[in-house]
Picture: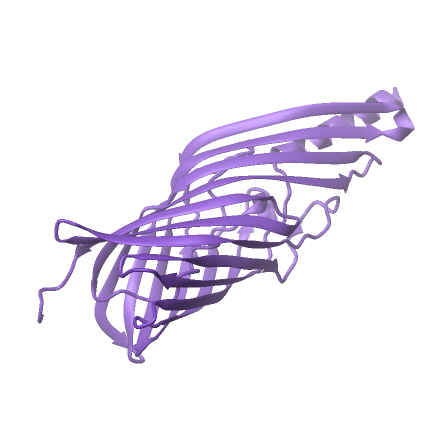
Length: 324
């Protein structure tokens, strides 16, 4: 009877754990879009209202092993696929702060996620092993993100200071593996710079930032502070087309914290590199900008490792009258 009770308790712990898989930064992802500030990172456009729609395509997997209090070993083999458009409105005002242009942006992500977890549990003392596979997929609207930027320009050098706030009002369910929303407040502060030489066509860009996360009140999980460094080097082969190389480095600088001592503390890390290309064209009198980025993740620690494609289309919705 004791063994049966022990086994039932272990299965209960396992089931509850699988419902909310633990990765570095809860869910294995943050609200800041890594790779969004590689090429042209420091350039804020001229006064006007702009619309952009980055579309994230992601596929990756993660494997980890954590000890259960009862002496079992819980093995996760997690595979995830995401397709997430992030429509964004950017308003660059005529206002100045410290000589820089002031801009506001607002993003509402939505999309599809598919998460599968292959699980195996071994209890050597009981001479028992078990395996289970859970899968979840859903289409939903995520948390909106609001931001403020200040941008400066001097000859070939452009730089900006950017803040983003994640607003946790999207649909979130603790009984689901796939959640596009985070159910936590978050603030990101990023500074970016771009050197663009229109004579030679060379562009060098970099951005560095910190993401501060609040606690998920439904899971009592507090995600750590995240550091991210992004960079790109590219060259315009014509006034309309450029090609280059970009990547980013991500590292948590404080541990995740959870009320369950079983899982301990976590820090995540990942590196990426890949090509980037941009193409600009006219649609009637409207200027349209497109970019295509690919990132291959490697050297991951407590994070998924996979492939990322980030495609973006942007165009102006309103510009001030000439001379106005």
